[in-house]
Amino acid sequence: MVLAMTVVIGQLWGLTVIVDAWLAGNTGTAWWGAGFLCLSFLAVLGPRALDPKDR
Image (tube, rainbow, N blue to C red; front, side):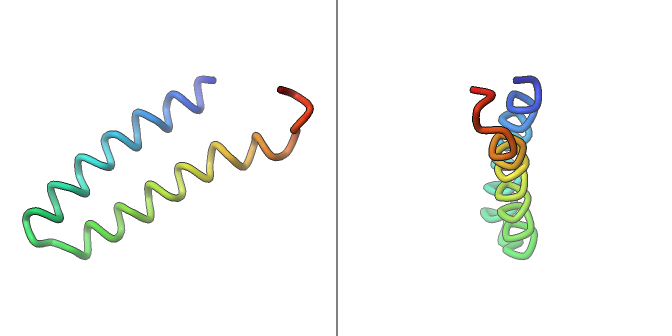
């Protein structure tokens, strides 16, 4: 649960950085940030998929 909450907070922070970079015209940073959001989402799905009967 702590991991999921940390990831959600990180995604909200990352989304803020991405939107700010995109609006400033720095699309390279925005794409790297989008990659960060995808990886952080997978960081929650990975451990969940390892033990599906734990739910």
